[in-house]
Image 1 (cartoon, rainbow, N blue to C red):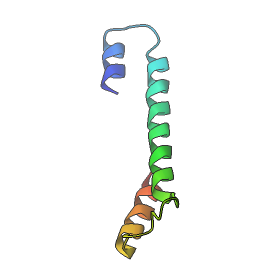
Image 2 (image 1 turned 60 degrees about the horizontal axis):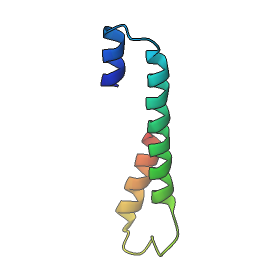
Image 3 (image 1 turned 90 degrees about the vertical axis):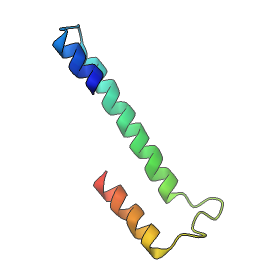
Length: 63
């Protein structure tokens, strides 16, 4: 985001393309996090308390 702001301030061409890329990276990161949290492989539920599960649900909802 800082890079996009700098591009706008310096009037560099096409800051909207960089902004789009930033949002795509954010979306991919969020998707990866959600898939890791919801993953069921390898006994991922082992060792998770109810509090952990509720916290993960909250984080997913906030995203």
